[in-house]
Amino acid sequence: MDFHFDLSLAENYHSNSQKIRVMSENWVGKNAFCPICGNPHICNLSNNMPVADLQCDNCGEIFELKSKKGNISSKISDGAYSTMIERINSSSNPDLFIMSYTADYQVKNLLLVPKFFFVDSIIEKRKPLAPTAKRAGWIGCNIVFGDIPTQGKLRLIDNQIVSDVSKIVENYAHIKSLQTNNLESRGWLLDVLNCVNAIPDTEFSLQDVYAFVEQLQEKHIDNHNVEAKIRQQLQQLRDKGFIEFTTRGHYRKLSV
Image (cartoon, rainbow, N blue to C red):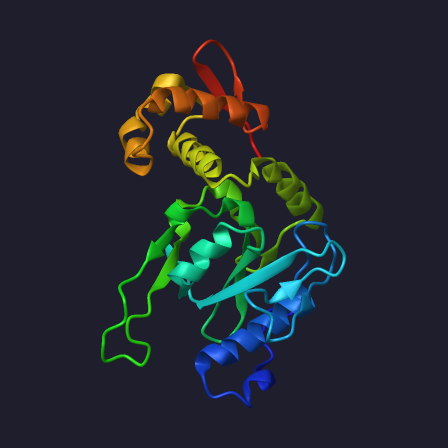
């Protein structure tokens, strides 16, 4: 696989962000496989398509692409805050490709964050633009990448090593069991999954998860019985194949 961008595509553009957008989308369209169905090619969409950048012509899944020079940081800059929140609350939110590239314009990493891992709490509102700015008052947002559970970061390319297609498709099919259209339910499930991930041992107890009660209460201020909610979410994670019960009040993480 050639990891280099086609630099000739950027010749007619003046803005660096436009250059990167054109080159990165072209690269994905020519080289990336669909992580949902395994189709070896993903199609570029026309520039006037809102939000979406690419689409699989086999399964029809749509994708947005964010590209960053250097390492992928804990926060990823995105567009308008209100638009992002509206997208998350709708059925039109695309899956998100996140690409990192080197100083000499080579793709280094390509990850996929499935759309059902997006909740309000991972969207950070930025400060409004100053009154002197061209778009005074405009409020952008950041995707808090660090708050997305590890299960929601599928690595298609890791340091220029391409992952096995069938394994990625299998992983996507498994984590899709976490999908729910109810944002509150999705938020609780992913928050408790993050807590489980933060426990260093493969085997853990209910008390280990209760250690996160205060943290979860801050995120869900209207809930007055967090411990009961934790038990409910652990049951959900068991039913979806992410953990298993061993003995009363004890669990084991399952590899995904």
